[in-house]
Structures are given as structure tokens and as C-alpha cells.
Amino acid sequence: MTEDRKIPQHVAIIMDGNGRWAKKRGLPRTMGHAQGARTVEQILEDADHMGIRYLTVYAFSTENWSRPDSEVKALMNLLRKYMKTSLAKCAKNNVRIRVIGDKSRLDKDLQESIAYLEEQTRTNTGIGFQIAINYGSRDEMRRAVARIAEEVKEGNIDPSGITEEMIGRYLDTGGIPDPDLLIRTCGEERISNFLLWQIAYSELYFTDKAWPDFDKAELEKAIDAYNHRERRFGGLTE
Ligand code: FPP
Image (cartoon, rainbow, N blue to C red; front, side):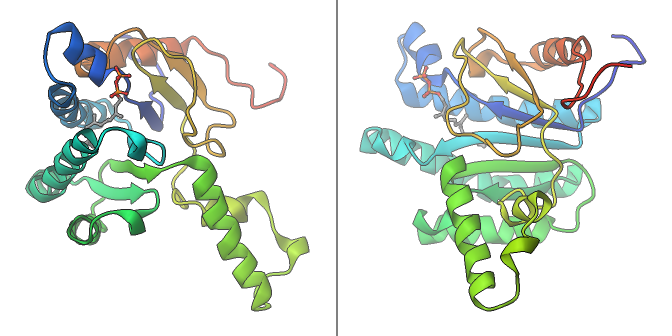
């Protein structure tokens, strides 16, 4: 580990391969998700120790509702459990939680535990942990556009005054800097409707490791690769 390497401020992760990880071991897919949830907790801790300021993970997409009922239920139960048990840990580690996505379609009790956890961790000053649940980037943009249109209708915003910065503020990630690095696990090289607006200039890193096998060493590898990229944001090198 070199001392002068840059640590990305914000890392986003598409956690793929829970199902394949389980299948390879002759286990039900839900066991893959359970192991994946453990990986999330460990990586959050590792990211924090490494000095990453924001971590955003894709836990459940707007498209994931089409999976078998039993799998949707298992994923929701994992998230339910996470919301219930993580408060003590967040308090101890100063983690601030935000759920991004359309929460209105989630069960009432889950919505309530999310609201409680967000409220209880709101003033924490450590790593910001964003969990995307019932999230789709196009849906997020649709909701943002609808809210801006409402403001225009009310006469609070003039259409000519709509800036990119303003649109960013209306997204679920409003106030959070864009990801510097986006990681996707398990060999797929697509974005799958994740943070389309926010990753305009992010570096992309793909690994063959399935999410349940992703660990600190893998995160280090991704950060090393990030350090070998030259970020130009559309400009020229000096
Ligand atoms: C992709 O694997 C993973 C998901 C759809 C769910 C991710 C959820 C978790 C890791 C658990 C809960 C998260 C938290 C924050 C506690 P896949 O099922 O698409 O795998 P496959 O492509 O191999 O079938």
C-alpha cells in the first residue's frame, strides 16, 4: 500500500453474483443474499477505515420485483433485519444512513424503520452510507423532474433557471458528491440503471469476484486501479 495514493471520496457498488455464489455451493439463492449482506457490513467498515467518505450500494432495483416472490421476500427481510440491528453499530461507528429509491412501495414497517434509522443517524459525521432500495436511476430522474415541474407550476422556479446543479439537488442523492469510483462484481460490465446522472465522470471498475467473496483486498485492488486512471473530466492533461 503506497502512502500517497488517492482514496476516492465516494465509492458506489453494484453487488452482483449472490445467486451464482450460492448455486456454485449447492445452496439456495437466499443464502447468497445472506452472505452478501455480511459482506456489505464488512466492506462498510473497511471503507470507513480506509478513509472513504461515502459508500453507496445497490441492494434492490425497481426491476428486482419481478423475481420470484420468495426471493423478494427474503431480500426484504434481510433489509428489514439490517435496519433493525444496525443502529447500535452506526452509533458506535458514527455512520450516517440514507436510503435512496422510491420508498413508498415498501412495506409500512420497513418504511418506518428506514425513517427511524435515517433520523437517528442524521447528525453522525462519519462515513455516509447510501442503500439503494426500490431504486432505478430513470425512476429517480422521473421523480426529480416531477418535483421540479411542481415548483415551476407554483411559480417558484423559472424554467430558464433550471441548472444541472439544481437537478442534482432534486435527486435522491442530493447533497452527496458524485461517485469517484463505481465497482461492479461478478463479471458483468453494465450499469443496470444505477446512478446514471451521478456517474457521468466516475471511473468504472469491474471484477470477476462474486459479491459474497468481495473483501478488503478486492477493495484495495479497485482503489489501486483507480489510482492508475487519469481523470480529466473532459479536459486535457497538463
Ligand atoms: C445481485 O445478485 C444482488 C442483489 C440483487 C441483491 C443485493 C442485496 C444484498 C447484498 C443483501 C442486502 C443488502 C444490505 C444493504 C444489507 P444476484 O441475485 O443478481 O446474483 P446472480 O446474478 O448471480 O443471480
